[in-house]
Image (cartoon, rainbow, N blue to C red; front, side, top):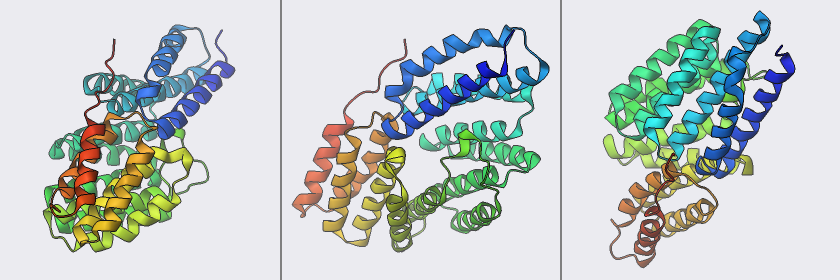
Length: 311
């Protein structure tokens, strides 16, 4: 008979692996996450009480949710979508709208990263419906500010800024005393980083003046992230460097970009490598600045590395 202790152990394992992903990136987590799935899938058919089984479905669903995110971060998109599909099915069986909202957010981020903006917005909208059903304003905030980012990339300036303001209001109204493990990443620092990402995207689609708004938001995010959120700090540094270069603060932007590269040496993430490439392009727009050209060359050397393959 499976007991609550089995589910608690799985929840603790998933929390530890999620922490490793935040610190080191998805690539170092792949084998460990696959092992945990193999070990815990048999629990789904083991005898258990109704209460334990409901919590188990959420726990295994979140493990699959993490597996999808780890695969996405490692550049294994097809595998990521497969895991997310399993996560949605298990969350649906458990009727856990909070987990459904989070999986939709992560599926939306997969599409956003690859430039499928309308598909990303569809998943964010589905996630917001689930968050509304659950009454979870933090989940709603996550999805709303990510919708703002997608709108910014589409060039919908008014819509992006309206959604960003709404997401901030939801964050302020959210109960953050008991946060599910899959949403713990979304702190004041992450909200500031997302706002900076929205304005950095608007630099390219609505006007360079948005760089001036992005810079202090991204500085606050970078300063707020600890070592436990190293990948998020790197991603914010990349955006910060980009906005600094756009503003004409080339020396500072180059120094920020080099700092991001230094941190990235200890993180295994295809997504991070992808996010460096636009920074290299921006650096090349300073053809007379040797530091900017050196930054672009260093990024090119780092981003040639291939992501690991799933067996």
